[in-house]
Length: 265
Image (cartoon, rainbow, N blue to C red; front, side):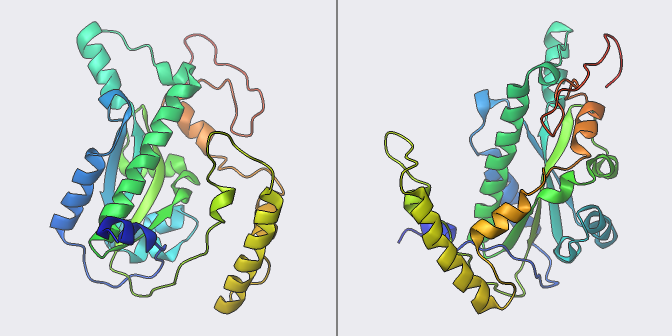
Protein backbone atom coordinates (compact mmCIF):
# COMPACT_ATOMS: atom_id res chain seq x y z
CA UNK A 1 0.00 0.00 0.00
CA UNK A 2 1.18 3.52 -0.79
CA UNK A 3 2.67 5.17 2.32
CA UNK A 4 0.45 8.24 1.97
CA UNK A 5 -2.70 6.11 1.74
CA UNK A 6 -1.54 4.02 4.68
CA UNK A 7 -1.07 7.14 6.79
CA UNK A 8 -4.48 8.55 5.80
CA UNK A 9 -6.25 5.27 6.58
CA UNK A 10 -4.53 5.12 9.98
CA UNK A 11 -5.98 8.45 11.12
CA UNK A 12 -7.37 8.74 14.61
CA UNK A 13 -7.97 11.82 16.77
CA UNK A 14 -5.41 12.10 19.58
CA UNK A 15 -6.55 13.59 22.88
CA UNK A 16 -3.54 12.70 25.03
CA UNK A 17 -0.06 14.08 24.33
CA UNK A 18 3.44 13.58 25.70
CA UNK A 19 5.47 16.59 26.82
CA UNK A 20 7.96 16.07 23.99
CA UNK A 21 8.12 19.31 21.95
CA UNK A 22 7.36 19.36 18.26
CA UNK A 23 10.47 20.14 16.26
CA UNK A 24 10.44 23.46 14.41
CA UNK A 25 11.45 21.67 11.21
CA UNK A 26 8.25 19.62 11.46
CA UNK A 27 6.10 22.72 11.92
CA UNK A 28 7.81 24.32 8.96
CA UNK A 29 6.97 21.30 6.82
CA UNK A 30 3.34 21.35 7.98
CA UNK A 31 3.02 25.04 7.11
CA UNK A 32 4.68 24.47 3.73
CA UNK A 33 2.28 21.60 3.00
CA UNK A 34 -0.71 23.82 3.85
CA UNK A 35 0.61 26.56 1.57
CA UNK A 36 0.88 24.04 -1.26
CA UNK A 37 -2.75 22.89 -0.82
CA UNK A 38 -5.47 23.71 -3.37
CA UNK A 39 -7.10 27.11 -3.05
CA UNK A 40 -9.48 29.24 -5.08
CA UNK A 41 -7.85 31.38 -7.83
CA UNK A 42 -4.61 31.29 -5.80
CA UNK A 43 -6.02 33.97 -3.48
CA UNK A 44 -4.78 31.89 -0.51
CA UNK A 45 -7.47 32.85 1.99
CA UNK A 46 -6.01 31.00 4.99
CA UNK A 47 -3.73 32.11 7.81
CA UNK A 48 -2.43 30.06 10.74
CA UNK A 49 -1.44 31.20 14.22
CA UNK A 50 0.58 28.74 16.33
CA UNK A 51 0.12 28.98 20.09
CA UNK A 52 3.04 27.36 21.92
CA UNK A 53 3.31 29.17 25.25
CA UNK A 54 1.96 26.81 27.98
CA UNK A 55 0.01 29.53 29.78
CA UNK A 56 -1.60 30.74 26.58
CA UNK A 57 -2.51 27.15 25.68
CA UNK A 58 -4.32 26.97 29.02
CA UNK A 59 -6.20 30.13 28.08
CA UNK A 60 -7.22 28.61 24.78
CA UNK A 61 -8.20 25.39 26.51
CA UNK A 62 -10.65 27.39 28.64
CA UNK A 63 -11.95 29.28 25.60
CA UNK A 64 -12.48 25.99 23.76
CA UNK A 65 -14.88 24.49 26.27
CA UNK A 66 -12.18 23.40 28.76
CA UNK A 67 -10.79 20.69 26.50
CA UNK A 68 -7.61 19.61 28.34
CA UNK A 69 -5.77 18.39 25.25
CA UNK A 70 -5.64 21.97 23.94
CA UNK A 71 -3.41 22.83 26.90
CA UNK A 72 -1.58 19.51 26.81
CA UNK A 73 -0.52 19.47 23.15
CA UNK A 74 2.75 21.39 22.66
CA UNK A 75 1.29 23.25 19.67
CA UNK A 76 -2.23 24.58 19.23
CA UNK A 77 -2.66 26.03 15.76
CA UNK A 78 -5.63 28.24 14.88
CA UNK A 79 -6.74 28.29 11.23
CA UNK A 80 -8.41 31.48 10.02
CA UNK A 81 -10.30 32.56 6.92
CA UNK A 82 -8.29 35.62 5.95
CA UNK A 83 -9.52 38.42 3.70
CA UNK A 84 -7.18 41.04 5.19
CA UNK A 85 -4.52 40.47 2.52
CA UNK A 86 -7.21 40.61 -0.18
CA UNK A 87 -8.44 44.00 0.97
CA UNK A 88 -4.84 45.25 1.14
CA UNK A 89 -4.32 44.17 -2.47
CA UNK A 90 -7.56 45.86 -3.59
CA UNK A 91 -6.73 49.11 -1.84
CA UNK A 92 -3.17 49.00 -3.16
CA UNK A 93 -4.20 48.65 -6.79
CA UNK A 94 -7.58 50.38 -7.00
CA UNK A 95 -7.89 52.35 -3.78
CA UNK A 96 -11.23 50.63 -3.22
CA UNK A 97 -12.36 47.70 -1.06
CA UNK A 98 -16.01 46.80 -1.61
CA UNK A 99 -15.98 44.28 1.26
CA UNK A 100 -17.47 41.52 -0.87
CA UNK A 101 -17.56 38.91 1.98
CA UNK A 102 -19.98 41.11 3.91
CA UNK A 103 -22.46 41.12 1.02
CA UNK A 104 -21.94 37.71 -0.59
CA UNK A 105 -22.37 34.56 1.49
CA UNK A 106 -20.61 32.48 -1.18
CA UNK A 107 -17.42 34.44 -0.59
CA UNK A 108 -17.54 33.43 3.06
CA UNK A 109 -18.16 29.83 2.05
CA UNK A 110 -14.99 29.94 -0.06
CA UNK A 111 -12.95 31.02 2.97
CA UNK A 112 -14.54 28.30 5.10
CA UNK A 113 -13.86 25.50 2.64
CA UNK A 114 -10.28 26.69 2.16
CA UNK A 115 -9.76 26.41 5.92
CA UNK A 116 -11.17 22.87 5.71
CA UNK A 117 -8.74 21.95 2.94
CA UNK A 118 -5.88 23.57 4.86
CA UNK A 119 -6.51 21.80 8.14
CA UNK A 120 -6.98 18.43 6.43
CA UNK A 121 -3.63 18.97 4.72
CA UNK A 122 -2.02 19.88 8.05
CA UNK A 123 -3.43 16.73 9.66
CA UNK A 124 -2.09 14.55 6.84
CA UNK A 125 1.33 16.22 6.97
CA UNK A 126 1.61 15.94 10.75
CA UNK A 127 0.46 12.33 10.92
CA UNK A 128 2.79 11.42 8.06
CA UNK A 129 5.66 12.46 10.35
CA UNK A 130 4.43 10.44 13.31
CA UNK A 131 2.66 13.26 15.12
CA UNK A 132 -0.87 13.15 16.49
CA UNK A 133 -3.64 15.68 15.92
CA UNK A 134 -7.20 16.53 16.84
CA UNK A 135 -9.30 19.20 15.15
CA UNK A 136 -11.01 21.68 17.51
CA UNK A 137 -14.18 23.39 16.31
CA UNK A 138 -14.68 25.13 19.65
CA UNK A 139 -12.39 28.02 18.69
CA UNK A 140 -15.71 29.47 17.50
CA UNK A 141 -17.35 28.97 20.88
CA UNK A 142 -15.82 32.17 22.29
CA UNK A 143 -14.58 33.56 19.02
CA UNK A 144 -14.50 37.21 20.07
CA UNK A 145 -12.05 36.39 22.85
CA UNK A 146 -10.02 34.21 20.48
CA UNK A 147 -9.84 37.14 18.05
CA UNK A 148 -8.57 39.35 20.86
CA UNK A 149 -6.01 36.80 22.09
CA UNK A 150 -4.62 36.36 18.58
CA UNK A 151 -4.75 40.07 17.74
CA UNK A 152 -6.62 39.32 14.52
CA UNK A 153 -7.23 42.34 12.28
CA UNK A 154 -10.54 43.02 10.51
CA UNK A 155 -11.53 40.59 7.75
CA UNK A 156 -9.89 37.62 9.57
CA UNK A 157 -12.04 34.99 11.31
CA UNK A 158 -10.85 31.99 13.39
CA UNK A 159 -12.68 28.87 12.23
CA UNK A 160 -10.81 25.77 13.41
CA UNK A 161 -8.05 24.80 15.80
CA UNK A 162 -5.60 21.91 15.62
CA UNK A 163 -3.72 20.24 18.46
CA UNK A 164 -0.34 18.92 17.31
CA UNK A 165 2.05 16.76 19.32
CA UNK A 166 3.42 13.32 20.03
CA UNK A 167 0.65 10.89 21.08
CA UNK A 168 0.75 9.61 24.64
CA UNK A 169 -2.07 7.16 24.01
CA UNK A 170 -3.55 5.43 20.96
CA UNK A 171 -7.35 5.59 21.26
CA UNK A 172 -7.95 3.33 18.27
CA UNK A 173 -10.08 4.19 15.28
CA UNK A 174 -13.75 4.97 15.19
CA UNK A 175 -15.67 2.97 12.60
CA UNK A 176 -16.93 4.97 9.64
CA UNK A 177 -20.17 4.80 7.72
CA UNK A 178 -20.44 2.07 5.07
CA UNK A 179 -19.03 3.20 1.74
CA UNK A 180 -22.39 2.83 0.00
CA UNK A 181 -23.79 5.48 2.36
CA UNK A 182 -21.27 8.13 1.29
CA UNK A 183 -20.09 7.24 -2.21
CA UNK A 184 -22.28 7.29 -5.32
CA UNK A 185 -21.69 7.13 -9.06
CA UNK A 186 -23.41 9.52 -11.46
CA UNK A 187 -26.27 10.43 -9.07
CA UNK A 188 -27.01 10.55 -5.36
CA UNK A 189 -29.15 7.60 -4.25
CA UNK A 190 -31.38 7.68 -1.18
CA UNK A 191 -32.54 4.08 -1.62
CA UNK A 192 -30.83 1.75 0.80
CA UNK A 193 -29.60 4.47 3.14
CA UNK A 194 -31.88 3.38 5.98
CA UNK A 195 -30.43 -0.14 5.91
CA UNK A 196 -26.91 1.32 5.74
CA UNK A 197 -27.58 3.32 8.87
CA UNK A 198 -29.03 0.25 10.63
CA UNK A 199 -25.87 -1.65 9.77
CA UNK A 200 -23.67 1.19 11.00
CA UNK A 201 -25.67 1.52 14.23
CA UNK A 202 -24.85 -2.10 15.06
CA UNK A 203 -21.16 -1.56 14.31
CA UNK A 204 -21.03 1.70 16.27
CA UNK A 205 -22.86 0.25 19.27
CA UNK A 206 -20.32 -2.59 19.44
CA UNK A 207 -17.48 -0.07 19.21
CA UNK A 208 -18.91 1.94 22.13
CA UNK A 209 -19.48 -1.17 24.24
CA UNK A 210 -15.93 -2.40 23.67
CA UNK A 211 -14.57 0.96 24.80
CA UNK A 212 -16.80 0.96 27.85
CA UNK A 213 -17.46 4.67 27.39
CA UNK A 214 -21.18 4.92 26.71
CA UNK A 215 -24.12 3.05 25.29
CA UNK A 216 -26.22 3.88 22.27
CA UNK A 217 -25.47 4.06 18.57
CA UNK A 218 -24.73 6.58 15.82
CA UNK A 219 -28.27 7.63 14.90
CA UNK A 220 -29.15 8.11 18.57
CA UNK A 221 -26.12 10.35 19.02
CA UNK A 222 -26.96 12.40 15.93
CA UNK A 223 -30.61 12.79 16.95
CA UNK A 224 -29.64 13.91 20.45
CA UNK A 225 -27.09 16.39 19.10
CA UNK A 226 -29.57 18.02 16.73
CA UNK A 227 -32.57 17.87 19.06
CA UNK A 228 -32.24 21.63 19.42
CA UNK A 229 -30.48 23.96 16.94
CA UNK A 230 -26.76 23.76 17.59
CA UNK A 231 -24.51 26.67 16.84
CA UNK A 232 -21.88 28.86 18.41
CA UNK A 233 -23.81 31.98 19.39
CA UNK A 234 -20.66 34.10 19.33
CA UNK A 235 -20.04 33.57 15.62
CA UNK A 236 -22.48 36.08 14.12
CA UNK A 237 -21.24 38.88 16.36
CA UNK A 238 -17.62 37.96 15.64
CA UNK A 239 -18.24 38.03 11.90
CA UNK A 240 -19.83 41.46 12.24
CA UNK A 241 -16.91 42.65 14.36
CA UNK A 242 -14.42 41.41 11.76
CA UNK A 243 -16.43 43.13 9.00
CA UNK A 244 -17.22 39.83 7.31
CA UNK A 245 -20.95 39.72 7.93
CA UNK A 246 -23.59 42.35 7.11
CA UNK A 247 -26.16 41.10 9.60
CA UNK A 248 -28.70 40.06 6.95
CA UNK A 249 -28.81 36.41 8.06
CA UNK A 250 -28.38 35.08 11.58
CA UNK A 251 -26.50 31.90 12.43
CA UNK A 252 -29.76 30.11 13.28
CA UNK A 253 -31.17 30.83 9.83
CA UNK A 254 -33.60 33.55 10.92
CA UNK A 255 -33.88 36.87 9.12
CA UNK A 256 -31.91 39.64 10.78
CA UNK A 257 -32.10 43.38 10.42
CA UNK A 258 -29.59 44.75 7.91
CA UNK A 259 -27.17 47.37 9.09
CA UNK A 260 -27.99 50.98 8.36
CA UNK A 261 -25.85 52.54 5.64
CA UNK A 262 -22.66 53.85 7.17
CA UNK A 263 -23.14 52.01 10.47
CA UNK A 264 -20.40 49.87 11.95
CA UNK A 265 -20.83 46.09 12.00
